[in-house]
Length: 93
Image (cartoon, rainbow, N blue to C red; front, side):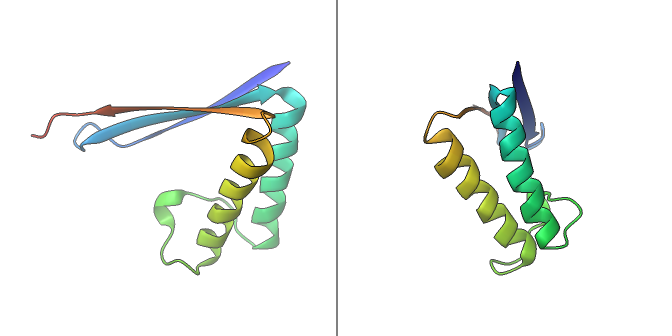
């Protein structure tokens, strides 16, 4: 089984818009999800939204860095998952 998760960034009134997709075999995505969920639970955070991060040392910033480390270094680097990002430049108004 294959899974894919996506999220968008930006709005039509900003300069750039992006969409990112993380995809992979079901068991790899589930393993990544467990690691990320454990990190959130250990820090007592209900949900992580990157736009809410305030300050480098905040608990949410630490979890965000750990998310990136897990996702890139432990999964994408070894081709256990795939990350695709498309960014479009929007004209200035």
